[in-house]
Image (cartoon, rainbow, N blue to C red; front, side, top):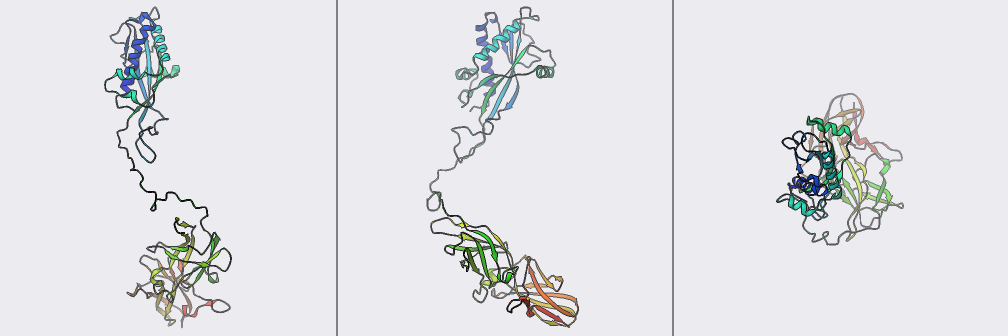
Length: 414
């Protein structure tokens, strides 16, 4: 790659090459002058044979623009690619004086094109000698010259832009000039250890567990603490397996070891309630969860299955269960405890009521206490449900042969 003298170095190398070789090809060009002027002033003050080399366009090189330079960056390192440019030149030939009776301009053009044809790759020594302090010769790619076909319309537009008369010309492309980026490169330190045990990549032949469905007791729409959940899928085994329950309301997922299910390809997960786990009311929160299986084998990375949605319903108590017609103040308790930010409603019959207060006792083993006020309650029997983050308590008694609404979750108003 090269510094910011690269474009000037390429132009000067071309000028020196043409000036040195054209008189050798045609002895009648001993007084030749090679200029680098814009088209409208190229001929001013000059009357001898002349070739004007004009850089009229610089474009990005698409192939090199986003390519890392070989030898500069390695895998895992980042560096800004070099500025890759193609240079477009227009060479214009002039004879001697104001007239060109012996077609000298054609001989000038022919000698120039022959020189560029025979030396289509710029010599490194010519580049070094063309301009002090340039390092274009050291770039990884050689600079090649290629004729650039242009029709009459394109050439006419170019000459018209300079408001001067057209002269016989030919266009060339010099590619590629690579200018070093000045942005800092980042190189990572060598790797000393691959993984916590320096084991490198671990390949496990067995597939991760896959969950297809889950079943809840009595085909309930939500699970409750104390219920058993049956998971069905493939690659299921109780050994080295954990059921992971995740919720936005929890600080961390809850992991429970499953047991083998009654049917092949199933696992059973028991959600302990406060009778077997005193911390259950504060460990869990009512609402929406996802459940996945985490397989952890000694010395191997953990495998996590897909996730299935699960609603965890609150278990509630209702007081009073009888009341008079009119405004009713209803006290509800919820297990698990309700957390800050959860959306809570009471479904009283067909009414949706927001709580007057929500209180979590200092004793984390105790349920959340809620107070609701329902105005204008008419005579009748009302089934009560508590909805927390979209999960409704289950007001059904499944202890008999036929499910019935639980009497302890009904308020009789008379």
